[in-house]
Structure formats: structure tokens, C-alpha cells
Image (spheres, rainbow, N blue to C red):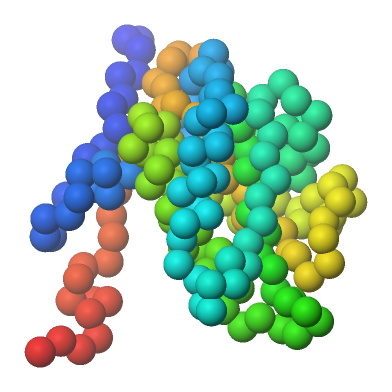
Length: 195
């Protein structure tokens, strides 16, 4: 049987949007030989740093592990089974943390603000020719056990960073999943009122 050839699916947008946003996607097939540099990681985190936040509180934190490091192994160990299957090849894993308490008081928009920081992070990665895949399938308790987390911070997601690959060493089911058509709700379904 001939090898499965897959290219990144292009989004069919309903209105013109920036090319970086149009091309952003979350593959699971990653190039095991790709390495992300410290400078690249710092640029990605810098983009997150400049996200907007309520009262400019910046209620977020990040733990980074590049493949081959102790941090990577600890974060990888926290991933659920299916996520471990495809994350072995990624170049870096980033834990996002929401600062849900500030000065002993609950901070209501922490998760919303962290989401904006994560979005900035993913768009920066895309602009650099990298791919980011965000996950909730991990055990936050393991992260809390393995890392020193400041009071008030809560592990919320893990983001995989790397370069997409269709190499035959990647499980065929993952390559097929990456090649499947992408879909979004129509604009009229999410635009609840407009005039």
C-alpha cells in the first residue's frame, strides 16, 4: 500500500481573516527530530506576556519543558494515555497556570485572561513556523506534585509545541486524524445578535 500523504488542511473561512489565524491548526503528528531553541520558547512566552488582562493583573504562569529535559519528562508523565501516545515527538510541552487567587482574594477572570495569553502564544508559534496543540487531558495533581507552584496558581492546560510531520513513523491513525476535514460552527450560529 502506498504511504499516506497528508498536508495540513486549509481552513475555509467565511470572511477574510489574517493568514496566521487562517492557517493555525492543532496537529498531533510531530517531527521527532525538530528541536525548539531557547530563543524561540522565549519569543512564544513573550507573546503570551503581552496579552490583555483585567486590571493588567496578568494572572498566568508557565512551566516549560523541552524534549529531553527533566521538565519535559515530568509534564509528559502527567498526560493522559492518548495524549502520551502522540506527544512523545513534540519539541516542547508548556503547562499553563491560572492565578486564581491574588493577595488572598479570588480573581474572577483568571481563566479568561489565561486563555487570551494562550491564544497569543499559539499565534506567535504559528507565525514562527511552529504548531501548538492545547490539551486538557492531563493530571493537574501530578504537576502540583512535581513542580514548586506558587500559592494561588492552578495548572490549567498543557500546550505541545513543535513542527507538524506526516512521516511514516507517526501512527497512521494520527496521520489520518490530522488529514481529516476541519470544521467550525457557522458564523450565524455563534453571532447571537447583529445590526
